[in-house]
Image (cartoon, rainbow, N blue to C red):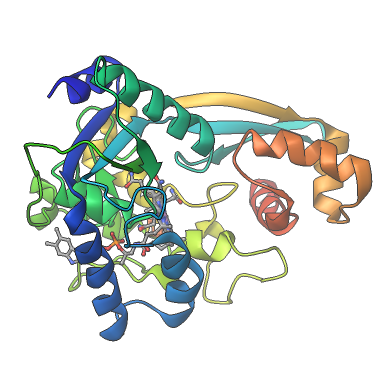
Length: 304
Ligand code: B12
Ligand code: SF4
Ligand code: SF4
């Protein structure tokens, strides 16, 4: 399809399914919650906010859902502290959300020319959509993988009035090696990936814990050596053979001076100073709410 080729020429991937499948996506997630396989807090705080499986009011006659994947490197942020420079990682998909959506809209518009269609952001379970559309495969770590960039990509989706002659809807599929590989399970520091169940225990995932506001301390069962990123966690992705080629794919963004690091560690954020540093954090896709806890934990680890 011409628009898919246009995205590929620009380093991105896409697939298309009929808009009728939106309801099925919502139903699958609801059924997991009914079956007690999604923790109540996670369902309330993430699923209900991130999944709206009805067709949008601004495009009630949407015909298709286009799902796209944009490769993204890990970001390194430098924190100067006590005479040393500490490089801390922000995983792909935290940053540039708006930029990615804008880029995909532009590429879709170009890819369909001279025809013209509407694209309305779809608020759906994106991994499930990507896998069921054939765009990606699930890893046992429950992250999705695309060719060439492994799991280092951001997903996004749009409803459209484009009436696709092809509906790529299919069953969920895992990466071929997941049957006999345990690398992510062994690397996971919190036991979120399990031997006998494909779906991860999201409530045990370090990412779930370190995305919470700084007032939430880490539970006692989290070993101090588990922490590895300023937010999120890269352990299961780094261990995966399908991520080998992108294991060292970083972009360096933002340096925090000794004074700025000290301010972030103090944790008293008010006025213009807070607004200035928040502007800097925005480039990493994060805000002040995870400070000082996450930074404190990582710098303490470097001192050991
Ligand atoms: C809530 C959420 C989280 C929560 C919960 C994640 C979870 N796994 O439940 C927390 C905070 C823990 C989290 C963490 C991360 N997240 Co997150 N997250 C989301 C969000 C908002 C919703 C995802 C969700 O809850 N889905 C519901 C669950 C139940 O669905 P699922 O995980 O796909 O589960 C499916 C599989 O288990 C599968 N399955 C079950 N059994 C079987 C058996 C077989 C054989 C197969 C094949 C499949 C299969 O079916 C389930 C669905 O029915 C999405 C954005 C969005 N709108 O989709 C981003 C999103 C999924 N996150 C993303 C990322 C990058 C991450 C992290 C990797 C970030 C990081 N490095 O720290 C981690 C990964 C943690 C992990 N191992 O899953 C990306 C994924 C991109 C990608 N490459 O796939 C997304 C899509 C954001 C984006 N726009 O790019 N996340
Ligand atoms: S992101 Fe970290 S804590 Fe979460 S499943 Fe992967 S390795 Fe485990
Ligand atoms: S580390 Fe192994 S089991 Fe885990 S997602 Fe990658 S291939 Fe699958």
